[in-house]
Image (cartoon, rainbow, N blue to C red; front, side, top):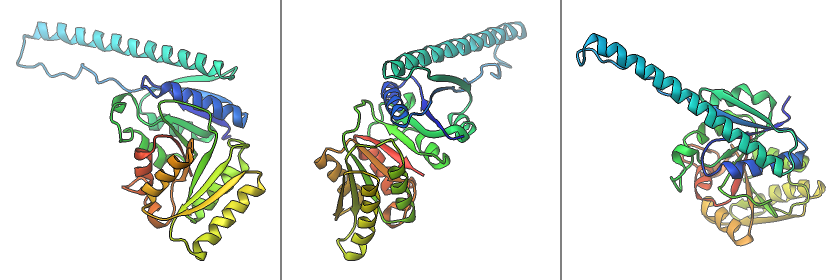
Length: 284
């Protein structure tokens, strides 16, 4: 049953914001929250080839020492992960989550997420992990694979959190875009928060018709919705509009037509994830 908010916890500078967004989302949707930390497999030293470099007896002693070192490193990583999860539990508890679940897995992050997919209502991840935390203007090494593989909404958190006061849907009139509008309209996540529905396209009657249809759907669901048709390069025009209007959170679909259809492969969506300074929700 897809009912949980899953938050990916690591030791990056995004971890606290991930906790805060996950707690806010779980509270908004009245959903259980699960904190997930995945331990990467540490590179083993046991396979080191020492033949021809030292004597047999010394080689065996060194291999035993390396094996012992691997074991200690694994234990330290395990304890560090438990400490991160405990800190995350305390942080989400301070945000009103009384009984958060915590999980620790070994292996690849994406494999762990796929195992949990059938219970995941929404996934919350940092824009970058610990290994790429300082790579400003880029997305984390795991992020592209997660968005492409997971069949659930993915909230990509920036380094700081504040509860959204207005959100923006990047609309392109595709079937997926209408599906995204329907998802937002039906979800309690953004109830009571003003919405900006924005389409980057030529201002024509043909483009205004689907925009107005989507606006009507949101208004019928009780959203205070401003619709805007803006011109220019989509990634720049959408980013400029977001900044000018003080939008706190951006929503985009994973696939569509026009210039957004290519999604994560050198597309507008990739550029928006890299460019935007606010958190972003990608819908599937």
